[in-house]
Length: 315
Image (cartoon, rainbow, N blue to C red):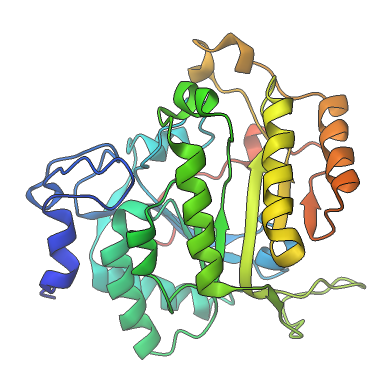
């Protein structure tokens, strides 16, 4: 299909992410995100390990995009973030994938690291919605977003699932090469909240078989914070900022699944998992703050087996 200038022109001198590197991705060049304008996917399949109100029992229809605008040194999806894997698809094929995931019973369509493809995703969503895509759309992001790019998604995305990684710019500069991450993430989260507002949960339990089922999220925001070793003070600051700013108008997911992979060897302070005591102190702090709309992780979540196989399933 021939794509409109609305889709193609943002890639000509790309400013889709806060790096605003100005790369002509339409001509095949790559910028900070490591990919050209062509859409590259690593996997499109039902995923069962998101927060319960996202995955349900049926699974979240998760689409993993190649490339990333952050490049965190501790990245758990390292192979796709560096664009080492990825299969090229058209906008039309992407819209078909959304519909195929719906047909498989997906609770939602979950777009993972989508920032650098937003104009193409917008077009694919419009095509799919015109053909009957009605399940919620989840925008699953590292939180490093421009307000301008997020506004392209207004009315198309139902659930925002951003990270809020740091409040300390020294940490964001060292680990994500983005000293401006804290202020950028604050502005991005404010725009996300403007678009989708307070959480809405569905009474439809069709994706649950438990004795005490958890409703699926229809609309709203879940902010994720991955606890990193040695960063307990900053984690507390993040939780405090989120709760003092949004209260229980958002959900906060405190994650203990950080897994040190070989590429963190140059950062010895990150070359360990967080301890049970560290995580308990952080979750106790969240309770003391008054956070009620929250998720915590229990058991052995810090395992490499929780990292999916990027084998082009569903692509």
